Structure formats: C-alpha cells, structure tokens
Length: 217
Image (cartoon, rainbow, N blue to C red; front, side, top):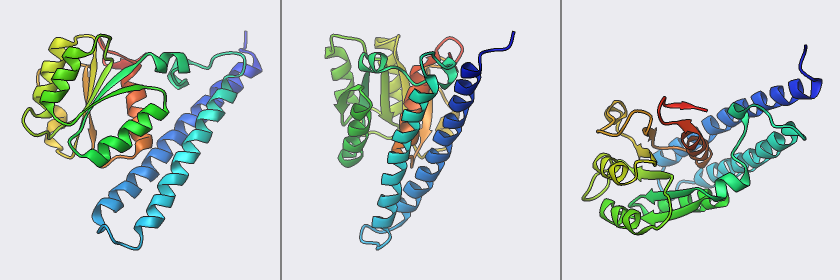
C-alpha cells in the first residue's frame, strides 16, 4: 500500500528543510570566514553582520517549516529536530577561553533551550563537570586551551562522564583524524571558523548520534 499523501508531503518537506539548513550553514560559514580576514574597523563588517542576522532569521523560519511539515504526524527521525522537552533536559559544558566567542555560543545554545555550563579553561571545565550533580550530555570545547589542551580534556572528561559526547572546535586540520583516546563516535571535530547555524546543527547531530556506531539514529 502506498503511504498517505500527507506522510509523503511531510517527508519531502523534511528533506527540503534539511537541504535549506545545509545551505544556510554554508552561507553563514563563508560570511564568518570573510569576517576573520577583515580588520575590526572594516566598512564591510556591518554588511556581513546583516547577512548573518538574516541567516539566523531564515534558520528560524526553516524550523517553523519543519514543524508545519510534521503536521499531526511525526516525520522520519533523520529529518526531525529534538522536541522542546528533549532539548530542555540536555546540558552542555562549553569550554572556550575567548570570552566574546563563549558568550555568543552560550546565547545561541540557550536560545535553543539547552542548559549551558561555562568554563574558560580545561581545569575549570573539569571542576564544573565534577561538581555538577546532574548529567552532562555534551562537552563543546576549544582544541587549543591554555593549560589542559582540548584533546587531553576530552579524554579526561569522557573518563569521568562516560555517557557524554564531545565536540572539539579548532582550526588545526591534523587534529581531525586523531580521537586522542576518546571512544569511537564519542568525539567529533568542528573546524573554525563556523557559523552559529552550523554549530547548532552539529550539536543536534552529535546529541542524536548512536555512540556505539558513530551514526545518527
């Protein structure tokens, strides 16, 4: 029997919005990359900020389209975002020594409904992890941290929190192939510079992944 037309339409809408998310992430990533090459007083920075603001607004519209595409029935899991209830129960440990970047990432993730614990160094991150009474589902850390580096931090964090997953952010291409002792599927790398849109997409992807297989559910 053929699936109901509403299911077919919802599935196609989910696929299209997934493609739109990837396209927006590419646009935002290019804009962020150009910003890093310009001086702080460059006249084009304001234009780039407007582009990034439009991308964020478009991403919000995409999420609304995803909700409409689901209708009264759920679209396939591969295309669906976590529900507000699921997101609201997830805690992220953010480790970044750049205060401005840490603040931007924190605001973006909290805007999605995540609980965010902040640390500016590896040592502080381990203290926060040890002192937090509830689960920490994801550590989002810079690869190049003062003191305890990101790779060492990831290994120690996962040893203490075996249920957690890790995203390491960095510009070093050589680090991407090194799991640094972290279990397969537990740690992934996100290359800087990145857009907040692509960061949020990566966070959702990692939180929904099957750690035993390193794949999305």
